[in-house]
Amino acid sequence: MLSKMFNAAAKFAELMDANKYAEAGNFLAENCRYHYGQEIIVGKEAILRTYISNYNSAAKKLDEIIFSSDVVEIDDSTFKLSYLDKIRKGSVWHDHRCEQTIRFERGKIVEIKHFDLPGEAEALKKFNKKVGLS
Image (cartoon, rainbow, N blue to C red; front, side, top):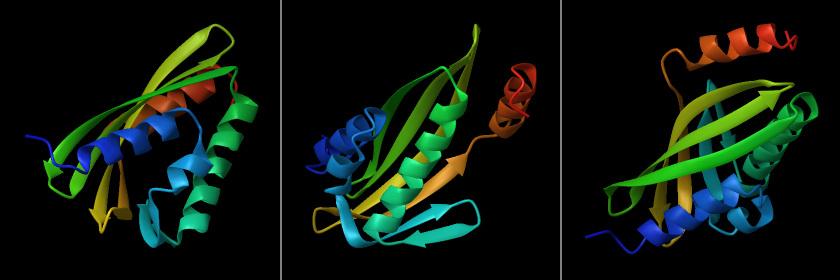
């Protein structure tokens, strides 16, 4: 049986897929911590700025981006979000995958951890080179 927080995790992922960052931000605790690469970004507003900046940077370079995600419950308060970003430049498409775990406390996300999957960074670099973005 899924925990009561599963629906919140799924809604957060759905809003992120739709670039509805302000609404997605309602799920973040004010002091949420986002582990992104070597950085730890602290605070709801700083995290949202990071998501928005990353999207805007990609949207300026690419012709199309389609986001989707799957949510899996790890335990009552922790969920794995598997993201698929289908990106297009010209007639060339690329599927980029990554994962995040999100952890809830008192109904809000208090921690997000980003995971780059093996081979994804290299495949993205090849795509960028192929379409003239690097």
